[in-house]
Length: 420
Image (cartoon, rainbow, N blue to C red; front, side, top):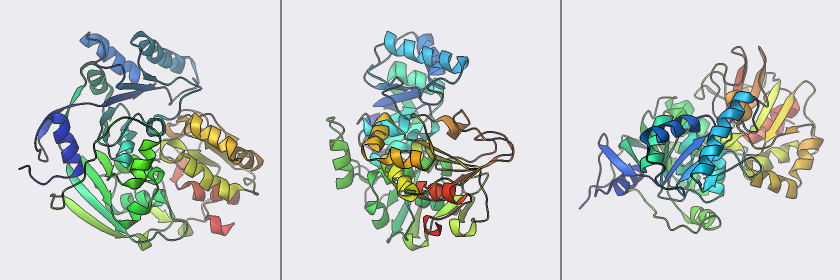
């Protein structure tokens, strides 16, 4: 009989063909999906060509040009062309060109390309997003992604698991983004280093799947290898509307061994912002109103889904962005963009004097569509606020939820929607 196991351990054991695994064990696993983008794919492609065996399964590779796409310059165009040519050469089934694409970590769950129980590697650190629907997904280097594309396999060191149990009702105005910023503020950016983070509790159960994806997305900001949520009826309904693939649910055993179990009262989680220059530098919005801003970005693989667009539009409706502030709204996928049109959200954004972009990672990584000049401050719904992350090294990025970001755009300083 197998030892009691966590979600992460069960998924890795199944994909390694083993009855059980233990933390620290090295295992070689079969992969369900390998992902790369326009920055990381060219290196992975070079690795595939060096191996010389082609791709293991054209239906299990996903290439999404999203970081500098639409191409911002000649170099980015060349990067994308390498990716595009490879996708056409090998008839890669999941290649998403501009016009039908989106930010990769919002696009894959939306299209049903990832399902519960999958084992996914991606040449992008926020590949951990898919734990929001019960998959084990993690970021790897481009060379490892290339080997995965060629062989369909990858090695893993089985991580220890930290179980985070959050119970109770969130205070008014608090969202999934506030939950993960609070957790990272409590444990630090290395608090879950090379650990799986397993989220549970009544607060988590009450969240939408989109909210869970937001939390899983930022597991890496706590140093986590993966962020995992159990499959429940909400998740099953979300997946059933997007995919016909059969999937396996993995639930943790009641007596599984954890490195640590953290209990959090949801009442302690209030709307917050992460001040520069670490996601763990969290402060209540109520104590941050004195900070004047120059720019707001609403979007990214963290908070660019329709739920996020609605939250921002609710605040912006009938209001305009403050003089001297630029507000950039980036729906995460073409599907979200179109839904914003159908629901009238685009009218709200434009009437509020926002800039609305095609789906792109753009400003999140300091790519384009919102670079900061020296000394400028930005409130952003993205996931990182490191030195120079969005532009000049003297600029500052404050991480927040879509509602707080929208309120800050109107106020001209960090603010709560209730302040308006």
